[in-house]
Image 1 (cartoon, one colour):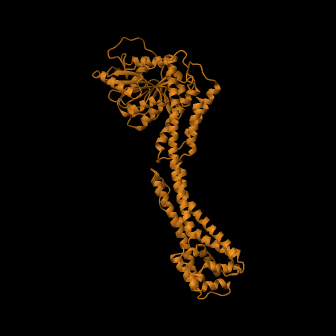
Image 2 (cartoon, helix red, strand yellow):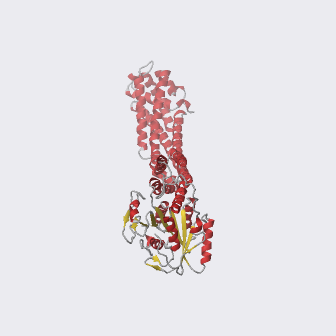
Length: 605
């Protein structure tokens, strides 16, 4: 990209538009102080001590580590915006900022970007002075950018230094498009040392991956040469990229190409007005006329001389070159003041979603536990079949005789009395199972309802199993109730009574004792349908156990039941909590660390 020999002016030569290169940016004064955040560049003495550079680098590395470790849960609010912001900041930090802090001799990277069919590749070939990249109708369909540089600089653009995750291929001579997503390195003796020219994919490609790829390269560049046409310059996608350059104060030159002779003035003025309206009035501007003066995929004559001269000035003058790269570097660092906090805000969006989802689970299952506790104490279980079974066995009088007999006489009626006891046992089991199942079902419904109110939450609820209890929950509940009944029986046998030894009661009588105690524990005295003194389990049991022993056994049995039901509900809720853990929603500390890293960057720069 060195200056060519002087050429006579040709008809149709390129012209500077409003705000051309010689008018856009005043050169710094002789004693103008460089920004302390700027990296040293080739040919310029370092302006900071080694300890200062190391500290600044470590702060940047810490910021990168914080961002790299961020995860956003897809499909939930803040995920798409957060992931985009994360990728944007991280790429520019790793691909542009850190390399320039670590190496003062970083080549100046000029990215030629723009619209489909704008003639970027033709311009690159013309600026280099030989064909290094292909042009034509097939070019927009590829996603393999071409980077032209001096052979002495090609190693700097290896995977070890430049965009390390991006595969690349080196080609001598004409660089043909590589595989999609591959960077093509094209060493050329025509390029001066310390400067590289990059032909990027189209920013308005129909393939979204292509303009995302273009953005990645623009994030790593020191200077943008943005090319658009007289037909495409008003496209929204063009201005999205130009506004990014404005917001980051990137060194920028804009080229309006394929400008027809007729209406040229109006087009150029309108484009200039749009630049002014979008805060880009100071950008260096060039115009390339609509021309067929192209040979060997390069412009003939002096069509692009103004652009070549501008870039030659930037590349050849250390002050000018430093000013261009410094402006972009400082602009990027300055942009982190808002970009990183904006990223933290998206983290906070997902943190709030996490809180809402977790709160829904906790609230639903706490309510389920509270419902169970209430039902176990207010006598509401002693209705329907359970109450009927109790009255049936209590009214026969056989139950009282069994409790008082201490196993010395067999029950009257034999199998009939046994059937009554077993029917009561089944009623107790069914009532407890129904209580647990109903409470768990309500909890699932509450969680699913609240999750579905959050965008993307319905899909999360479906992943957790939806609104139905798992098939295994019923059998596990049945086993837990049966195990509890057995535990109560063992408590009775082990503890005994103050006046009579329950341990001497026959097995059949121990079963009866267990059922009477369970009916008492289920809140018989609190039920509105209490059956009077003769059928009150509390009165029957006190005569056997005594008040203190009865209270002790009752408390232990009640706590054991609550613990078993609590375990069932906890195990059931884990399908929701495990689903939340699997999507890896960010934590509140992630946002705090981002804000802290931003503050540390301000202190260190």
